Length: 109
Length: 115
Image (tube, rainbow over all chains, first blue to last red; front, side):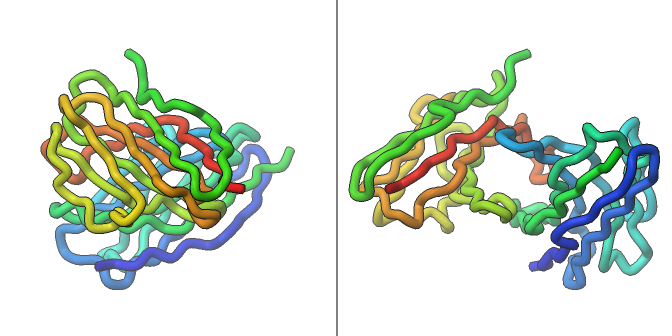
């Protein structure tokens, strides 16, 4: 099973692009990568999911290199409301789900 | 559409007392998860249901924890007796079912404090 490792915390400023990288060295071929966002006193909320290369939606992009040993969540032009904890999750088709410990992102004005 | 509902939101009990948490998933969602989340950590799976069947309870401490989802809709997680180390947030999530990669929809959680 893949173990996920994320930075404990990061900070940035409003309007900047933020990249959070998750390491998952032992990821298997068909494992998927998902990122969730969590605000205080709330449950995690889905941001984006992918298997390889690049995925983009209305709120974020997910970059996965060819070896898939890491993935990078990219948040464009962050605002104060993006201050939250971001979790990387690696899962397989058998419901083996490995959550990272989360990255606390603080956005400053 | 209503999201995942959990109650209570907060619970404070003394050690050795019993406690129960309730979860009502999104309507039509067949898969239900109970997670434990310690401060500064990611969620840890306790049990997963497919309809009324507990298909993965390998991480559930069965000496004190129990869960049920009798009609395949709402679910209850119980701890008896509670220990100091059980203080955590208990999260419930649901998905439509069918694939592990389905987006999980989480409730707000129940914050348990054991004194």
